[in-house]
Image (tube, rainbow, N blue to C red; front, side):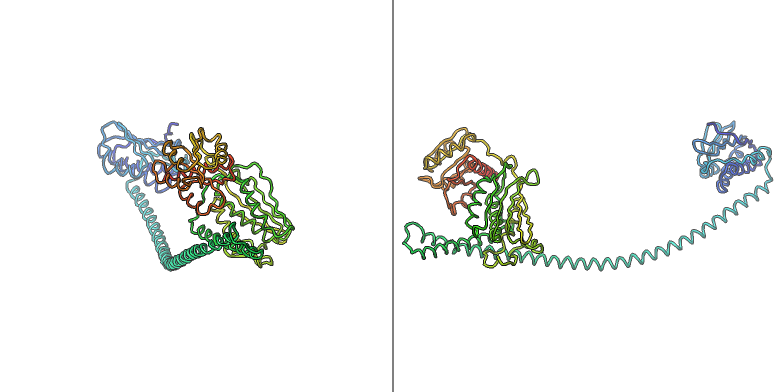
Length: 576
């Protein structure tokens, strides 16, 4: 859109400069600029006009109004001469106007109209009809009036600024006082917090020392008690074993009572020691695939003799198809035996039911033990997992136990990556749920091997092992004694060795020790096949990085589980 022309003037001498100044202020008023901007426009035109008059340049001034894109007053000054665009007047115009656009034959001064253009046509008509300026005296009076108004505005603003400064100073004083007060309070609070932290650190150190002392006490007492108890158990077995002196029925009964009591005491001491290990973090699981059918059979055989009478039935549901479970079998059995033992203690009639089923998660298995016993009051249910705590009830009197069973069982469940939860209704019974994660793919089945060596003096045992290795070993080599097995291992370096614990000439543990001392053969996976009651053999076998297999439970599943355990253990041995 082309800017509209409002007024045109010719400036050739000083009188015309007065007219340019006057018309500039009046046009600015006619398009809606406020008083201050009117003065700015008039002053800028006056200073530029004087610069042009000094250079003896005749100039045409055209006032235009621009409505878009941004509303503005345009003053176009044009001439037919060479003009210098520098000097005090030009600098003043640049400061007072929004833009100063120089061309070869003129300049355009731009003043924005922020509130939009509202033309006063009557005033513009009067300006166009009047072509002469007022006298210099009148113009001077007008300038003086403008100056007075400006000074009054400045004085008013100065007073307002002083008032605001006083308010701000008062506010600052209040802020400083508040800051000092808050700083003092914060400093006091910080001192209290520091003191509290110091006290908490001291208490924490005391608790850690007390816990460490308790664990040391449990461990030392357990170790000190196990030796004499083992001696009592061993002596009673010798008294009642074959080849011992004959005893009367009463004597044999008394010896059996001593043996049972010693075995119970040994189990309690072992439980106390394992609890101390679990609390100190030194009880580490040995993860391996678990044959759940064998675990269930073992638990059923252990619990049935504990039942009080025929009024209580043990019901074990058939195992469904479950995902393979990889965990520490010993810890699993201890957890479930503790839970089942509690169910037996506090159930006078009805049933105790054991169920293994798929867990709530896709990779979990649940073991559920429910009973129809006396139940646990709601306010006691959170305390049954505390160490040494026993719920007061009539059946508790005379019942053996230390109050460590459920606490120990929950610690073992957490070590295995699972959880142990309890719910109960007084007079109706209790339900305890053990939830464990299932197997990762690498634990499901043993890795196939090219060559497996079987060493045992029993031909039937070698045959059973060879059949169980079908699909696992491509080639099976047999030896009748431990010395031959060791020579074959050095000669052929098989991928797997299964050897009887009591192999002729050289025992399985002796062969295992020799292999672990040879750097080239230390990584061979070894399975020791043993009979009942291996005693200290289990500890030495596990410490040497081998797996164990009961000779009475040889099957593809148990052999595969033992091989997988041996392979994982050997892999960890190589890594070390």
